[in-house]
Length: 82
Image 1: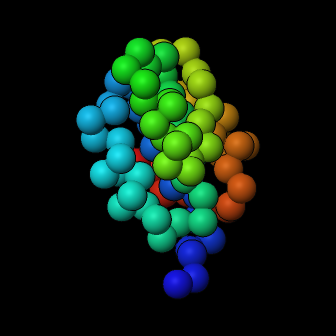
Image 2 (image 1 turned 90 degrees about the vertical axis):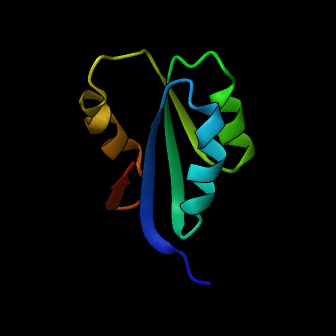
């Protein structure tokens, strides 16, 4: 299977219970990037174990404010924001 030249971006704060299912559903993307907003439940470690690249970020009230950073970090031009 050829992977789509897309970076899937997942914003996360203490979402360990959903993260595996979410990241596995994005297996068609060439890159999976997780922005972890100060999780305390092991979300970042789980994401890394599933092959996602993790960017640690302080918690913000509006996750959309992190998008410029994510666009610069993404490998591919197309972003799928989750």
